[in-house]
Length: 148
Length: 148
DNA sequence: CCTTGACCTCAATTAAGGTTGAGATTTTAT
DNA sequence: ATAAAATCTCAACCTTAATTGAGGTCAAGG
Image (cartoon, rainbow over the protein chains, first blue to last red):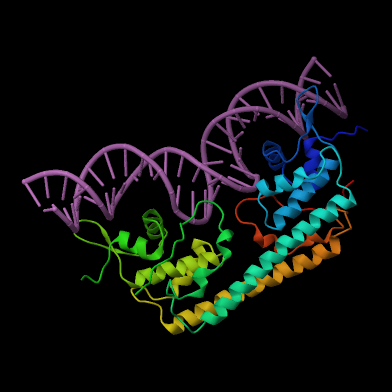
C-alpha cells in the first residue's frame, strides 16, 4: 500500500486519458515524482487537482488560466474546504460576469430584431463589449465605417 | 463607379483583414467573382454578409454554423429586414439557452461553495449538462469513480 | 526466466481560425 | 512608360488541447 499511485490509476479515477495527464504535466498543472524506473508516481491529492482542472474547464477556463488558479493552491496537498470556497467564489464571479455579458448581448439583439440595418456604425451588436470572448488570433475588429 | 469592389475596400469597410476575407472565401462564406486579371470583385451586399459573420462570431458561432445560417440567406443579395428578423430570433434562442445553462451552473456552484468535496461522484459540477461546451477533441469525460 | 501489460519519450497529427511570407502579376498614379 | 500599390497563389506557421503511433523500457505473475 504505497502513498503514491501510477498514472493508469489516476486515469481510471479521474476519467482522464493517460495521454491527457502527461499533457497536463507538460503544461505544469501537476508535478508527479518519478520512481527508480522513471515512472510517474502521483499523490492521491493529485486526483483532486485534476478534478479541479475538469471542473474549471467546464466553466470555460483555459489551461493557462487554470494553472494560475492552481498556483494559489498548495502543491502536495489536497485543497482544504477554505481553499475550495475561495476558488469557488472566484468561479462564481466569472460566471456572473459571463451571464451579464450574454444578457446585455441579448438585449441589444432584441433591439435589433426587425431593424435589419446591419450597419457597422449603427448596429448595437458591433459595439458589443464581448470582444474579450475571442480566443486566439482573430480578426482585428476596428469597425469604424459605414456600410452601403 | 463599378458595382463590384476590390478586396482591400471590403477589408477597409468591414474591419476584417484581407487574409481573413480570402480565408472566408475558401470556407465558402462569400463567393466573389473574378475580373479579367483574376482579382476578386465583391458585391456591396457582401459587406453585409461579412458583417453578419462578425456578429455571429460574437455570438459564439463557429464558421461552420455560420455557413449553415448563411445558406438561408440568398446569395447575391443583401438580407432583407425579414431575413434578418428571422435570423435574429434564431440567435436569440441560442443566447437564451446559453444563459440558462450558465445560470444552472452558477446555481450548482452556489450549492458547492463551502462543500469542498471535489468528489467525482458527489460533486454536482460533474453532472453539469454543459459538456456540449467543449469544442474539439478533449478528454473523455466518464467520471464514474469515487475519490480519496 | 520470460511474457504480458503498463509505462516511457518523442514526433507527428488533428481541428479552428486565421496570419505571414515568398514570389509573381495586375492595377493605378505620375 | 514606369514605379508603386494592390492583388494573386501557395505553403508554412501559430495557438489550444489534446490524440496517435513508433520504438523502447519497467514491473508483476506464472
